[in-house]
Length: 319
Ligand SMILES: Nc1ncnc2c1ncn2[C@@H]1O[C@H](COP(=O)(O)OP(=O)(O)OP(=O)(O)O)[C@@H](O)[C@H]1O
Ligand SMILES: [Mg+2]
Image (cartoon, rainbow, N blue to C red; front, top):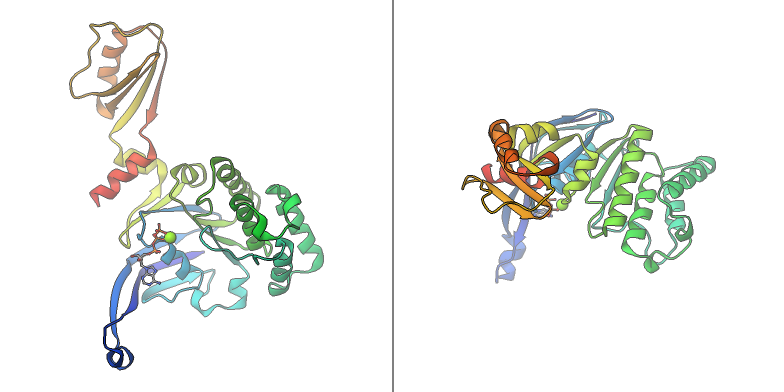
């Protein structure tokens, strides 16, 4: 559905000098390498999380895939099209949703923007009504579609932005930080919606987010990108298995730790009765855990993976 081969993007920005003549006739440019020879493929129905620090190249990739930007070098094919050709039959099958920019008309109620999209995408009245109703229901927005957009909160606006972008039932969704700036309730309702929508329509989704719990809840596959290069592409579970050497043991104690309780000096742990939390190297769990449990009275023990944020930080540091 999406194929990217050896894609490179170099931004060229004009540099101003103090000399107007030079600026007009001999303008100097500064080049910055935003994407450096990246390749990947995405199948129909996949939901892929794009992760990377600020400036890594995530938005640039999405903009190239949706036809907003022209690639400097490389091969890009989305649904059989070269996106930048901006063919109507291509644009009808995709949606680009970003938490950073409004597409709804600010002064008018959202329903008016929906009607505009109905005309642009040539959606017939019956399908339009059906789609609006369904999306409004799923995102719980019925009361706010008739209110001017400028009077709504960020969370309400974001839900309407999503409806506006999905009225034409696109096959591919590019979601660029859809939950940025939202509180945890609004964030969680949007994540739940994306998950339900994807299951219902088997849409192909590329999602970027700086909130790892969004990605963890939605995506099985992640692409980590740093300074324009892909540094990992695979399942989240493989990322953890290959790059995390530690596990977190949580023990619920029945009685406080005895004074003589001790752990080897190189073990990280925190203790706040009744919880004792210990970070152990994976290889040592079998041998060390029984040694620890012998010294204490406990009611529960759980073994967890290291938080995904920590694993990702390590991978970025290594790269
Ligand atoms: N229009 C532009 N002109 C020049 N350079 C740009 C332009 N847009 C982006 N860049 C540069 O390209 C690089 C990649 O930017 P991009 O917006 O793709 O990053 P990102 O991964 O989306 O970051 P963020 O997490 O902050 O959204 C950055 O170094 C950025 O400064
Ligand atoms: Mg971005």
